Length: 497
Ligand code: NAD
Image (cartoon, rainbow, N blue to C red; front, side, top):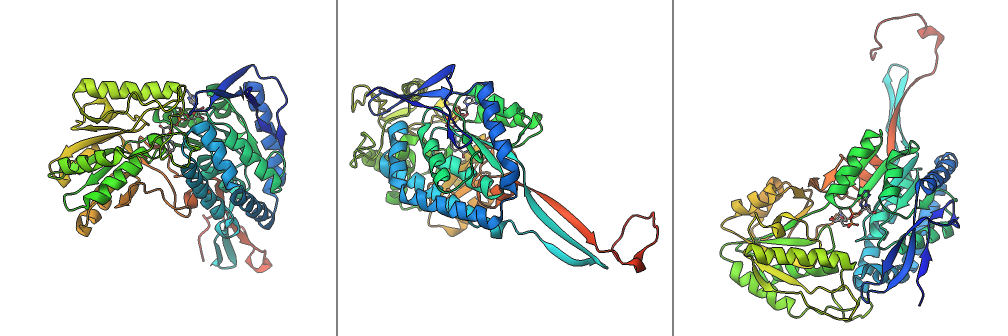
């Protein structure tokens, strides 16, 4: 099959121009190029932002009831066509279809939350705050907002932001990952079918050029970014320098602490599920298991035994539990981390290198290191692949020090039956999302998602209440309806009476 062309979605339709730059999109299970995606230059950035800016006044003035109806219709379409979207994700990302379906399910949660906009956007009203004076607050949209998303959740991460932004009355330019661009176009089609007016949601494909264009564009009022830490930091610094509101979620190194009283079978199940699901390409993947003495040998044995039974294969095969990595370049990067771990003296318990399911696919099998130490690059760097590192710790305190000493603070988990220890951990750990016997503690849609330290730049987490806060600005109105009896000039500072 000859590769397809994938292009931008601007002002309610596919872009018909001729791109100066394009990128290749692969089927990770075969290595074939399945599409060429257009990359936006400065002119296309202007075109997309202009379309969103034109659509803003009417969308901002569209009633909450009418906006809500579009979101409800979108939710129904997304739910009805979830399997199609899951297949699109698998074809370009490589994750197995059941996992892609899970991604879509979590995306739907966020749409459902946004459907409650009429309730969530209510302001406060204080009657007679001062004599004859009423005070109330209004939440208003910002204008055009940009969403820049990573490859690993091509549907869920855009839908962390887009429904809430739109529900609040903003218009959006989404710049998805160039590695798996098709899910965003499928979403754009569903929004159009749901009755969203042209220009309210636009998709601009591309790389750094498109991102830089959005960060500098004066009509873009806010940026929601998700990706690796160096780019998140860059986006935060550049966007805020241009006067924009920015939330930039970065990378992770999530530790799972296993205390001696934990159920080791459940802990091993959790470590394998959370370490190798989606081939470790999740920002909430467990990448470090901290085994508190004396459970190390036993836990490593049980993890290795489970890894031996994992079925790696094409994500379209219902038997497969783990798919390939997203690109050949990423597979090489992950492999070089494994080589560095071996060279640094970590104990390679399971070696996933050399796995070959198909000739051209980007395969790497589940890999396990034991006796990893904090100075090794396999510990310090985010690997973002199917590589699990076990660090031994002498006590709860040493384990906690390790987690808190790490520059990332996205997710963490503790496995124990000791409620007192778990409660202490939730209080003392410097991480934004904490699981107690839950390895991937992604908050439900009516909470908010976000890490601490180098895992998030800005002060708003994604989706849920903080998402609504991020996508609105508050105005407070103080009103008095004139009463001739209260006239008279008074130069004193107004005080409540
Ligand atoms: P990435 O940082 O390479 O890319 C993210 C986005 O930034 C993409 O749209 C990409 O086109 C753009 N980009 C890449 N290089 C750029 C540059 N130099 N200048 C401007 N824009 C640039 O991330 P990725 O590889 O697509 O995704 C994986 C990363 O995302 C991992 O680090 C993972 O932990 C992180 N992630 C974090 C979360 C979270 O919630 N904290 C969620 C998912 C993924």
